Length: 147
Image 1: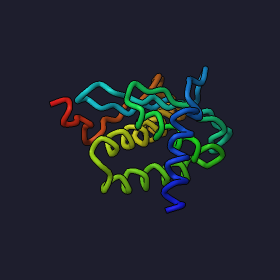
Image 2 (image 1 turned 90 degrees about the horizontal axis):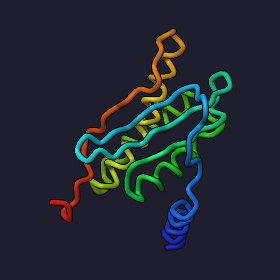
Image 3 (image 1 turned 60 degrees about the vertical axis):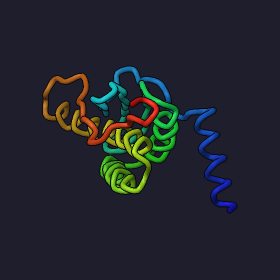
Image 4 (image 1 turned 45 degrees about the horizontal axis):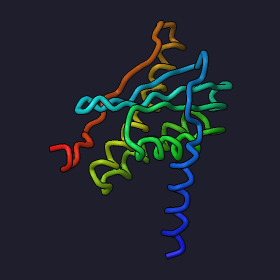
């Protein structure tokens, strides 16, 4: 029960004090995770030192679950390499399979925004001029209340 209480406290802390929320001026990469069903989206900005994520920020048009997920997810990636971040994002998406549909969509939006930033980084490094790259999520977060 103590673990559940600690998780609740961490969730509330991230809800009340989101980490890494905002925009990075002149980022090295920008990615967007978008829900086409309700136009919610997450934008992630990366500042790198070589292949290490020195700064990561996000902005979102979405529900509180999206903000909390973005806060927790970006907190995990500061100081990690691009490859480690990609692995975390893929594992994060894989672990969403058992989550309720709304949380699954919110989490996927955050992780896909990060993966889109990595595509944007690759494009920029190969000389392509591109402000951001967008990935669309596979589900939606339409709840019974909205039907």
